[in-house]
Length: 204
Image: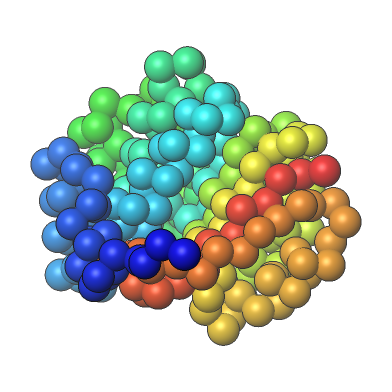
C-alpha cells in the first residue's frame, strides 16, 4: 500500500484554497472577535457541492457575518439560484447584509432575522440544498423541520458534527430512514475546530 505524505497537516495546510480580499478580511475579523466561521476549506466544499448538484434553492441556518453565504451565493448565482439564510443575532445579521452587498450578492442572498427553528414552519419548499450551522444542540430539532422542506435527492450539509452537542443529531440522522448520510471526521485548517465532523445527507 502506498505511503501517506509526510507531515500531512502541513501538506494540506499548503493547499488551502485561495480567497479574495473580502473573504480574507472576514477571516481576520472572525479570528479577532472569536466569531465561528466555516473557513476556506468548508467554504470551498460548499461551493463545489452546490455547483455539482446544480442547486437553485438554497437554505442556510446560521449566517453569522455572511462568510458561508458568500460561498453559497457565488456558487448558485450564475445559474440564477437563490439563498435564504437566517441569523438570530440582529447586529450580526446586519453585518452579514453589508458583507453580502459588498460581495455583489444582494439579489442572490437574502438574510433574514430570527430564530431559524421558529421560522422553518413558515418556509415554502422545496429546497435543493441546506447548510446547517446553528447551535449544535438544536440540530436534531431542526432536522424534524427540514424533512418536509428538502426535495427528494436534496442535500443537507451539517457543520460541527464532531461537537458533543451534536450527538443527538448524529444519532437521529444515523437511524432516520428519510435520509442517507455519511459522517466525515476531518482535518479542517482555519475552521472551528480544526478537527471536526461534517455530515452530508441526501433526502430519500
